[in-house]
Image 1 (tube, rainbow, N blue to C red):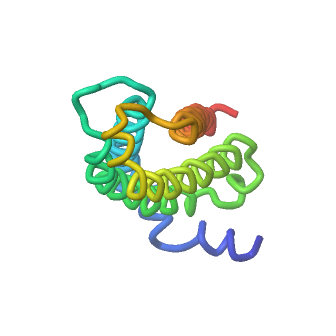
Image 2 (cartoon, rainbow, N blue to C red):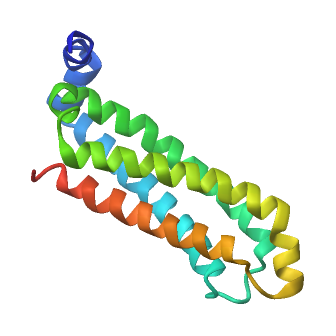
Length: 157
C-alpha cells in the first residue's frame, strides 16, 4: 500500500488531479484510445462472424495494427488515471473486473492475430470460418463489452 500511496502523492498525479488540463486530457486520450480499440476489434470480430463480406479475412491483421495504437494510448492514460486514486482502485470491484477483462481481451487479440496470420488465406479461399474463429470473435466481443461497462461503473460504485 505504501507504493500505491506514493504513486498518488507524485507531482504527476497531483498535476492530473489539480490542473485544468490534466484530468480532461487523460480522459480524452483514454476515450479516443478506447474508441480505436473497440471500433477496430468489433469490426474485426463482426467480419469473422460473417458481416462485412467485402472485407477479405487476409486484411484483418493489417487493421489490427491500429488497435495496438489504441491499446498503447489506453495503457499510458489508464495508468496515469490509476495513479491518482491507486489505493481505492485496487479494492474497487468494477476496476478489478475491468482490468481482468482487458487482459483477457488483449490475450484473445494476440491469439486471434496468430490464428489470422496462419489461417486467414485458407478462410478466404474456403469462404468459411472454422469454429475457432467464431469462438475467438464471440469471446472477444464479450470481453470488451464487459471491460467497457465495468469501466463506466468505476465512477459510480
